[in-house]
Length: 409
Image 1 (cartoon, rainbow, N blue to C red):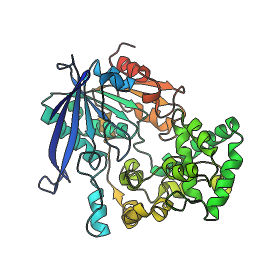
Image 2: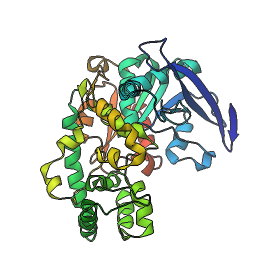
Image 3: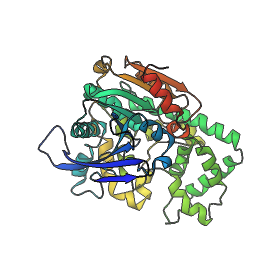
Image 4: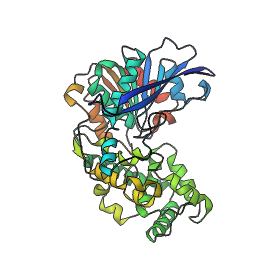
């Protein structure tokens, strides 16, 4: 289907691909992608955008002038390919799975970065382009590094924004770093908003007594509430959290909003059940975030957490109950490798990465180490933005990366 919007031309692409790319005759699923072209951009090369997640659909464009600044910047140089990663958006959704828990877990094991990359390469071939460029934000950057491990010959330029993973490191090392980052961010938050520490302490007391409830009467446990710290990892998130905490816990606004302020919802089950698996490079996760929480967090419930998965979400959210046994099986699964470190060191692709110094979700030290694997990668290291710098910076981060990758800076 083709659609014209003010300043834009949209083209829909739907493909059937195997659930298991290693078994071409296996069950098939549908993959959806949308090609976005500026009015004068029909001859521009393609750039694939891989969004964060896992479990998030691609952006939905409106008129050219209504697009985020970073997308407008890209459309000056590229035709933008927006992929609904498998299980999301208009690609075959995960939905309510059929079969035993073991069968469901096996099905979901095919929704990691390696499968997404094979899907993307099918889209690449369908477009008939010799090579294209790839931009990965957060988890999308993990997918981009997997792309360079599997199909480096297909990539002209690779861009990463807050998305260089940690190949060669155990997931426990990753979470040890992110817990420490959230401790620092929590303390910085309370220095800025000192009145919020007693507010959080009061909420934790209510949660511990089992009396903190959402509008739908879902129980909000202390460890669920701790995940309000997710907002400390995005630009403007501290302010959003502060204004939310101004509401009394018994007020309709608090009860209506508390679950929405927390991560891991039934509308995106992949984000919960596969979140730790996206870090698992030839290893078992075994509820790494829970296992590695430092003792000082247990002693001080006002210290907040970020993207640290906790089983209380599966226990207390009725809409997530169906995934409880599946999540346990996936946490016990040995996941295969996602990256080929030797091959990455020989990839002749121009690349650039924005690395955020105090990133709450992707450890800075490991990102710098991974950047050193790619011989053609140049880095933009900044403490001006949080993990969401691609959005918060307007055109600045994207423009800088394009300049670095193109050798203009």
